[in-house]
Structure formats: structure tokens, C-alpha cells
Image 1 (cartoon, rainbow, N blue to C red):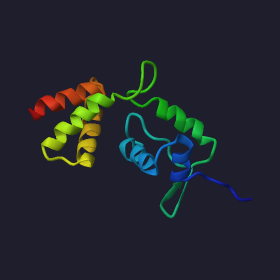
Image 2 (cartoon, one colour; image 1 turned 180 degrees about the vertical axis):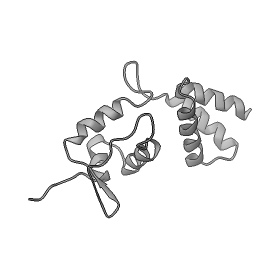
Image 3 (spheres, rainbow, N blue to C red; image 1 turned 45 degrees about the horizontal axis):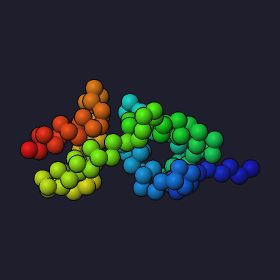
Length: 124
């Protein structure tokens, strides 16, 4: 009996995001984080695969991301301000995103807009 699994592209298509976004989710939210991305059901030659019924679990995980839920989505303006300030200090976008994700995880008492404002202040 053949079993079918969704790879990164299948998960990305199901959520209307790029495969890069799924890779980032897995990278930013590893199994030892406070909000780990659901582990794959199978790994073949290093490529993860999830059963299609895991999409509901992934959707619940995604709904629990910081900045989601009642009251609106992610704080786009704060992040954009931070990214501009980081670029002015010589960080490329990937470096700035990684730094922001690290600080957000290291300071759970602050939400992302607060971390962005704090970092912008430190850049000044």
C-alpha cells in the first residue's frame, strides 16, 4: 500500500505561502522551542513529509504564532521600521530577521513590536 505525504511544497501550497516560509517556520521554531513546528511524519533522504491530516495540526500551530489571533495580524509597521534601521546599520535582511527572531524568543515578556522599538532605540 502506497502512502502519500505532503512535502514542504505541499504544506506551502496548502497555506498559500512559499516553500521558503515553511523552511523558515521549521528553522525558527525547532522542536526545543516554546512553540515548535509540528514534526514531520516521515523523512526520506533528508526531506520531511507530513500526512495530509497533519494540516489541521499545522494550522493550529500557525494560528498560535505571535501576532496572530484576535485583534489583527502581524505588526508589519514595527517590523518594517526595524528592518530599515537594521539596514542603515549594515545588516542584510536575513541577518536582521534572525536577530529579531532571537530577541523575540529571548525576551518572552515583550511582544515583537516592543522588541522592534527596543532594538531601534539601541541602534540610535
